Image (cartoon, rainbow, N blue to C red):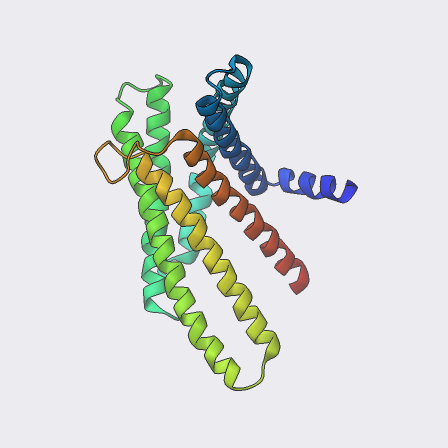
Length: 240
């Protein structure tokens, strides 16, 4: 129990970890709140609890939006360090990553403008800016899926080479990377489903997903993010 609390504290002390925890709580509250609001219409107390959870989820989502006001510089630093991906061995992975970085970089100012418009800090309509940010988020997710699929293809080729000879540790490392890419694809697909849901009505399944399903998809993606962060931290600890 004490170790679990210490691990949670360590996660919450970092910005990345805290954001993932808030995201998980946000979507899980939406999942439970949506389910209760839908099924407990005859039970006033449960219905009220569901509405409260949905309001709590909305506040946490707003909290994350405000915190992202300070993410532009860190994203810019990452984009500059990656550049045109000269260190990447594969050209497809390189250019997909560059396009993904561009989409991510443009996402932040669009969301900031939409937030400022909703807060009545600037005199513009927020609708189109929320749409721009959603389109950029969806584009980044789609590019991330394509990148992971390409990386998986390359890892499979490397794994076949190692299976012909020795290198047991290298094979296990490659399999671990492949599992990571599969988790990344699953996470991005869940988020992409939500991104489409928040597009204007008439586009694919936009606006058709029930609240609990949006929460389920977001919770799934968030838990995968926590798992991947934990495994990444473990790998770094082992390497040091």
